[in-house]
Amino acid sequence: MADMAGAGQRVRFRPAMPGDAAAAVPLIYSSGPAAFDYVFATARGGDAQAFLHRCFIDGAGEFGWRNHAVGVLDGRVVAVGAGYGADRKWPFTLAAARQILGHYGAGAGPGVIARGLRVEAVIRPPDGDMHYLAHLGVAPALRGQGVGRALIDWLADAAREAGRRRLALDVSTSNPRAEALYRRLGFIVVGERRSRLANGQGRVADHRRMERRLDAVSARPP
Image (tube, rainbow, N blue to C red; front, top):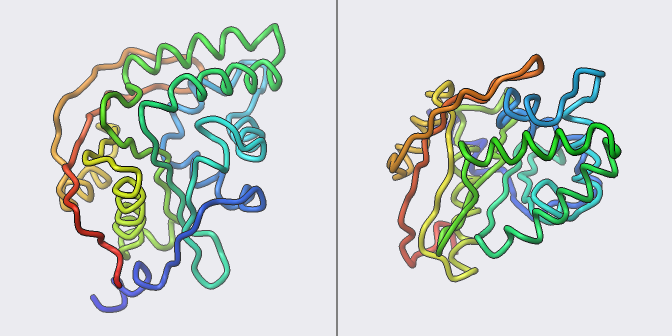
């Protein structure tokens, strides 16, 4: 058990940088591959990870490096996550429209935008005083070793520094392992949204919204 906990204790977290793209983007994609493919993959061979990579490097918006933190172990990026509030909705929307049209063009771009808006009916954007956690990914070899817990603790501290007192996230009903972790960390299910969204590239599963109140005490060691 000590070895399993050790990885989470040794990972060091920091704000992401553009040079993290090669390692961070596959981890972002791993947080919801079917949903990403539904929105960003196209019948003509458009690749979701290629779009996410472009956005990460660009820096702006929900998928940009400025919106992410990474965990580093032995010089390698092994975890990634994002945390943001409702105040980012319109800046993110404008950035996404620019990035989509720039990547897919005027032909395929409007369809990508439409699919993204449909997904927002299942995976709702943050509202009120919520600090929303998204794109939580850990390298497969380190899952179950405390890295996910450490990542959420780090993002929770960022939420406290932003003056927020409520964490929220969405978890796919097809990912019970992640839901079990969030329950152990104090999150509770506050709602579930059904999905009928599917195409030839991917299917968006039903999602559960989970929330947790934040106390005033930092989880980071002094």
